[in-house]
Length: 385
Image (spheres, helix red, strand yellow):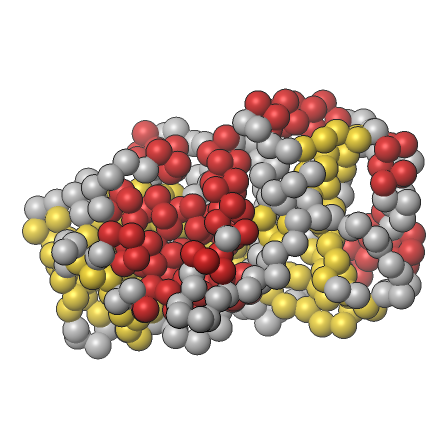
């Protein structure tokens, strides 16, 4: 029986633990420094899923994951407890002005080549389908017709964790601070309380806090915590059939029952590890609200009901996940740096990581190998929200 220690009990670590224990009979210990998951990206994610990426690997991972989410009640059932995620698939709608239309057409061609169910709509078609949308400045829209939407991410995290435990995995509260190493192998994980955990393999899946653990193994993981604000808005307006809309400005919005969720794009000047309680209300007042009101005139009458912030585990190298064996390490792996799409890809990545650690092929994540950091081969993802 293979013994695996996973550092980080968020959705990526929990998914990997679940598949290792369930499918490969591994003895898994998950080390999590904050069992409340109060600052974890898994707890604060918007929990949306899309296939409209620029890289085939991301399209494939999200396709695998949404198929898993559709049957999650069977996959992650524990006895009579069948998880319900509230998955809905209204799609993503990317909007483009004339300047952005050529790029949207290029992405559409790449997505259709990978079998993504997506359609290009001209302004008249957009206005017919979404009469609440202002289209005068638009040239094109790209709408996901299936396989895109949103779900209850924290519920998925809990379901993976519960299933992993039911299959024999242990979740322990401790903080990993270093490793015992012999040659190119990790022989034990050292924790702040002085305890050591041995095993056949170790996985760094600590999200935005993975870099110090990589450094302890001599590997530079260019992953850091980048704060993203989400605003919960009340409005009397109804937006029937509303997908997750990405405006040409980079701002986005979607419905959540009678409410609107909205936020802004990644900003190049953002600092790492900004406190999560520092909500950027100035950005909302100066930029987001005017943009929403211009794109959906009915949203001029709205108010902020609440807001929250979470961290993207941002991979500064190429905005794509790092998943696979760590360079120079025979038995150390990582799954981190997914730059905002970790929740949606956790089922596929966790399944693939489990296969890789068990000594099987894992073609879905081959392109995400951390070796590309040393090779200087960035896998650029153009569609970062």
